[in-house]
Length: 183
Image (tube, rainbow, N blue to C red; front, side):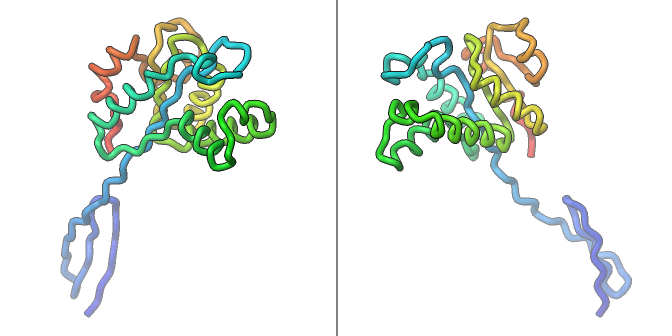
């Protein structure tokens, strides 16, 4: 009994007793990881009360619903929830975190790293956001798909790193499905 294996991602060719035997391998489909990016503080100078000082975060829930509707197996990372969870692990609030520059730095770097590791970054930018700019820049540098939702059609950063820009959340809702990468 002699066996030789030549492989590719789609099939494996075995030679058994010098005769070809083609076996089709089931390639496990790995779920895509999406990173929801977007404005948090925007132009607000200080974060003293997240409920009052942060831009409305309602878009995060809507984006999550759209992603899950179109890609039910998706893994979704929401950096705001990530940071809130890290604060809670330490018995702190996001406002407490904000008082410690080392915590801010550590968490910003981690969130940007998570964006760069995700398969798809979707950034809601009705206005410019420095944190989101770092996320989409690093994701693009890592070769990831960057989608934006923004009226800022002449913004050079968006034009340079975005694979596709939706004009608003309604456009994203109607057309996101055609931009989901295949696995």
